[in-house]
Image (cartoon, rainbow, N blue to C red; front, side):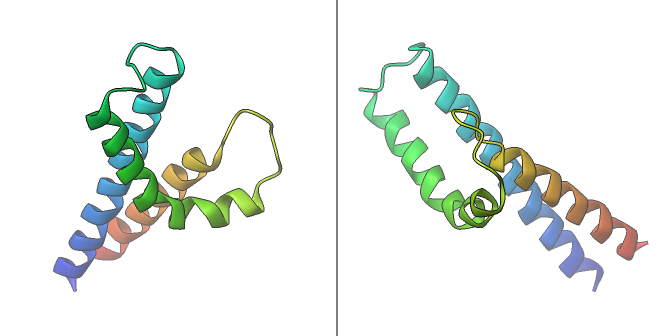
Length: 92
């Protein structure tokens, strides 16, 4: 049981890491620090988006429209951290 909880915790931490990477690459594209013509980073960004979209779409449907600011990654990170804490508490 402990191994399963540790595996789920590692998966949740990896998803949080991907959300942070997606946010940073998006900011770099938005502020033209990195050119959107950089094929490698565009592919990385699109790959991360395709991995995270199934997790973020239900959150986006629940949250009110806030215009240009998307709070769904923040909600996902908070929810995953809550899951990590709950799993760590169960493991004790």
